[in-house]
Image 1 (tube, rainbow, N blue to C red):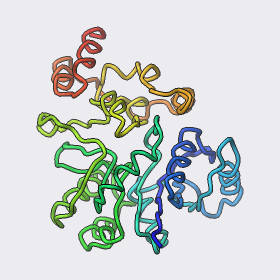
Image 2: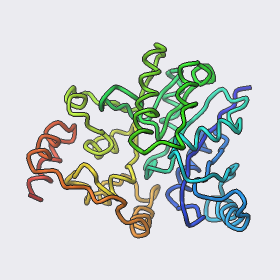
Image 3: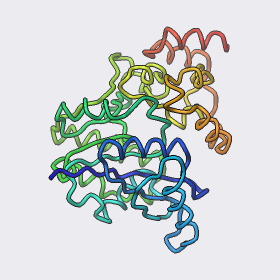
Image 4: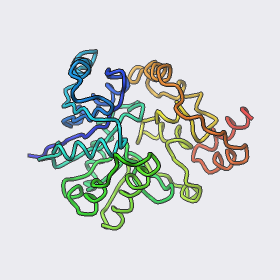
Length: 299
């Protein structure tokens, strides 16, 4: 019998389950995945906070059944997934989903997307393919078969010392390294959404930032990155329009995003890119017909 497992990287110092993350986990569980959640920043010996978090998962409008694993806050998502793999949470699974809490969504039901991608029988697929630096699948939602996960090239990626790496190092050796390992192993991959513009690779654009509305409304990846709305590191001019862009406000409540943003101020003060750089970025975006007016109006 096939078994589907989701390895989920989660971090919230409040020891509660945010409503947008509850929604995501519920949608993943509704696609047949057993949930294993690495809770970064929670001391395994802090039984009071662990009990509070377990109660938060089990209560609320949508109770979430999940196995929780407390861990120190290091290594970001790859460090969390590595710990779950070391705990053999993937044992017996024929389908493994790597996911994390860095997105708002899905803003339309996940099941049709999952069924469509399962029908392709791709051994490894992601929600979004990026051409930034090197072609790769973004790691915040990545599905692979048992054979792929057991491939030596893939295992080597997950055996790296992520807990001692900086964020740029984790991106390089984790997400991009996984993309290179997939290429080296000549594994067939697929993506629910991928860019059609060559400029995306040339300019190393992150489609979840520069093309956020195109991706969201494609019907193939109905998500928005939390980093985009919280920090906007790329200086995308249209992010303030996020509330009006949510396609179904009865399915995904925009107040969930507002609550998160109210409790999570920008983490890094990014130097604002110059107008010329943002103009080039807007022109290269698949969302350029809307990105350009937003940029010009705000200039």
